[in-house]
Image 1 (cartoon, rainbow, N blue to C red):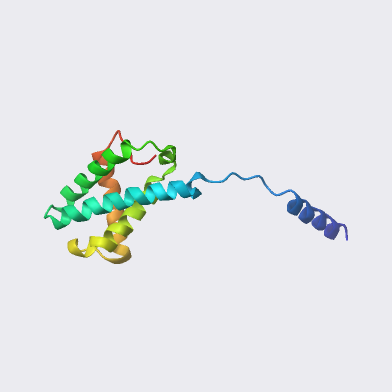
Image 2: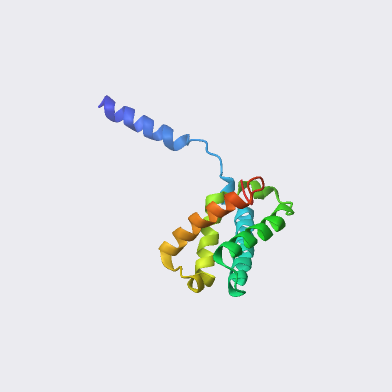
Length: 133
């Protein structure tokens, strides 16, 4: 009987006094919009470079540098809340959907490959500057 009473009191306490949590900045719509803008910009530059005959490596480096130059001039405090892996995932999905077939990448495997490739080249290309934190 006392176990039931104790459980009921504990349950009521949890319902009446929920844990205090803090909202994540990554759920902020302005962060999502900024991330979407950066990924669209990168995808456009990368796919155009591929269509113009650049190799995958040249297109990747060019798109990263041009996108970073634009992003570095953005005065947007939400830029610091973008997670690099999330941005890389969004970029990979957009690139594979828009022009992945033209360089032989499709589906989930293509997205996963492009994401790891993007992160590798991105870290080599911009060791001091970052599109995101």
